[in-house]
Image 1 (cartoon, helix red, strand yellow):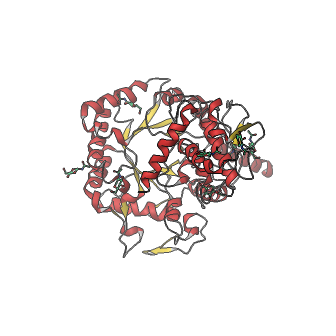
Image 2 (image 1 turned 90 degrees about the horizontal axis):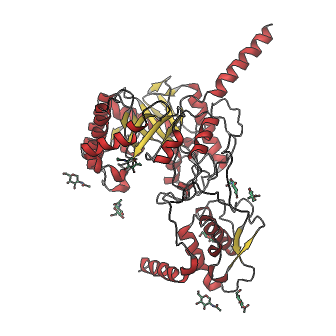
Image 3 (image 1 turned 90 degrees about the vertical axis):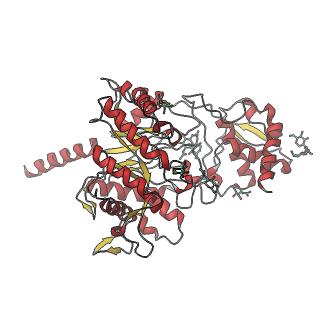
Length: 486
Ligand SMILES: *[C@@H]1O[C@H](CO)[C@@H](O)[C@H](O)[C@H]1NC(C)=O
Ligand SMILES: *[C@@H]1O[C@H](CO)[C@@H](O)[C@H](O)[C@H]1NC(C)=O
Ligand SMILES: *[C@@H]1O[C@H](CO)[C@@H](O)[C@H](O)[C@H]1NC(C)=O
Ligand SMILES: *[C@@H]1O[C@H](CO)[C@@H](O)[C@H](O)[C@H]1NC(C)=O
Ligand SMILES: *[C@@H]1O[C@H](CO)[C@@H](O)[C@H](O)[C@H]1NC(C)=O
Ligand SMILES: *[C@@H]1O[C@H](CO)[C@@H](O)[C@H](O)[C@H]1NC(C)=O
Ligand SMILES: *[C@@H]1O[C@H](CO)[C@@H](O)[C@H](O)[C@H]1NC(C)=O
Ligand SMILES: *[C@@H]1O[C@H](CO)[C@@H](O)[C@H](O)[C@H]1NC(C)=O
């Protein structure tokens, strides 16, 4: 009897836990040359129990895909549109077109508007400093005027370097907003507080590790192995908590210590860097999910539910690599919506294979590789450079999954990436006679020579429409290259 009761109880707990990734959000970025159909992506999100999704724009196709899904959505205004939003009428039009229009039964459940994306990154040199706060105000006011102010909140996803602790006292309790933006930050947090909107911050332990070789590796993870940093008697064994609490302190210093905090992005890439791999990603997520399931919060906000959006859903092969090659490999799913590794989103430690995208349509099983008859090695390098200018070769870089290839392997990989990105167009596997087609899987070891999917959109222009002009373009490319060496 007792046993049976226990069995029922655990069955019940199991059921509750498995259906319940409740509250776990996902970032859906679309910087891909070949996009999965939005409906397929939304089904993937649902199949894996995600109930919240964060976008980087308010693209109409994406929104149509979300219509009728009940998914809580954070739509976004890209940084490039912030300046325009400092005009109230423009902000009102944005809200009418991208929020109000979807506000009907069977429409899209928009809950948040992200105003900009990390607009205060130091690498932007202050370009968005003057427009961010006015844009935030205008969007929230426009939402209020549209009668949506109670259900839709405007927020600004910020990078974690908008706050810091002094170099001579590097502890969370000493957290303050960065001095160059302190007035803006002060205005923003007061306004968020007044509007009952959350502060949104992106926290990346991976970047802490990436940026400094001295960073203690274990401190990036959640398994308590690192030497703690002690702050007023509180021991911090992971940088996520320390970082989050630095923000809590910065908010406290502004008099809004209880402002709700959303983690707008957190995750770990699987390629493109020596620390970007499946093993470390698994270690990171496993610790993160256990932490979230335990509802322990952080030392300065103990026993609190943490609102988190993972970054990200899919790999994105045309994302800017200015921060590093890893940028294109953040997905917990591959570019074609296949799970990369088992995980347990509910934090129960029962890793299982996630549900991949269904009915994915692929191009033919054809690869473009270096021809065995290629005899002009002096032309090789230019052709590789050409291919990699228009296709994603980040996996060839140091520390990545294809870094071990020899010169011939490099050429084959680059040619194939170009060929696939160009939808296997016949004339995109020429490379001045250096390339040839094969129906044999050309993958080498851990290096996956991929076949692209049939794209759901055709709008992206990634290269010349025809390789007919390759000679001319190659020349242009060489000129660019030689100029950059001057
Ligand atoms: C709505 O959002 C889309 C996609 O982000 C954007 O291109 C468009 O300019 C917005 N519409 C208005 C009226 O601002
Ligand atoms: C910021 O300034 C640096 C150095 O002056 C420059 O290289 C970079 O292109 C600038 N970035 C932007 C977004 O303006
Ligand atoms: C922002 O405003 C200040 C003060 O008006 C001005 O000096 C600065 O050039 C502006 N920055 C940008 C990027 O427009
Ligand atoms: C080099 O390759 C080209 C194209 O495959 C071929 O036409 C040519 O005969 C080859 N030359 C030599 C010396 O093998
Ligand atoms: C080899 O390629 C180079 C550079 O494209 C070209 O100038 C040269 O004529 C080619 N040589 C042969 C034998 O085809
Ligand atoms: C292959 O390409 C990568 C990335 O460009 C480079 O680091 C590596 O040295 C190349 N390998 C050979 C054998 O040329
Ligand atoms: C090619 O082989 C690799 C490595 O064995 C595998 O991961 C990949 O799925 C294969 N691709 C296709 C299209 O079968
Ligand atoms: C390897 O490539 C195949 C298709 O060619 C793709 O389905 C699969 O997701 C890729 N796997 C990884 C880990 O990139």
